[in-house]
Image (cartoon, rainbow, N blue to C red):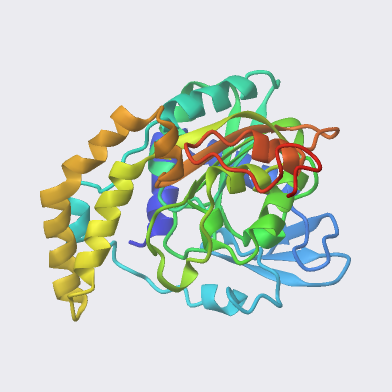
Length: 345
């Protein structure tokens, strides 16, 4: 049984049966748009999706639409047609040992996120780069009134509702009331373009929640591109009205990551790498808990392992670059300007 079959069984047996799948299918049929020509809408029939405008067709594999632009050379549609029956992987050695990271505010931030959704009669939330988050996000939002979570990713092993690339979201404008993107934007080639897509698919007043690492080593191999300070994170979402932003994981987590990756430099293969990683996490995991002590420290912001941004779409709003610089709350205060005009000597 592969991951997608597990997803289907999970939905049908735990979350309300075929009615939940029908609701999702109806939503996708009503709100999807062609990732090639951006025309609305797509027809879903005979195991494929069809665009009336450009005549492009997109496959549906085991009930999951593959709505990826045909010219996408990084994630070609053909790669999702193999339909290989993969046995669920057993937990790796690193998954059986303590995590090197903490998350100081995720639960509180998602409660704020859910509170905004309560202001809508019904809500649709896009989970971008869903991975395995379905296992706990469905439960977290189970008490929120009439909220539909739509999970998407490019990872063939993710628990999702459709395959799509964040650079070309296959949804109409103003479709979602919320978007969640945790540990996603460091893995895309053009973060500004993805954020622009997030803005486009959100309704006015819709909410976005983002987490992006700063002091953290490569963790997704060739699909790891970008890091942001908190100021850079704000700049990326400067068209959103900021509700809150700050530290998710601090210098303690960053230090554990650094020790782990320093030690991995002495390994020579996958097996030794797994054992060293597990050993380092067993020995040094406790350092991450210093982040709870440092979470309100200005110095910790400068050494953050990961930051967050929570904001709302406001059609009339844009944060100026000057304001972003003025909002810096770290410990390293400096200026590249003369304190007084004409003070040059």
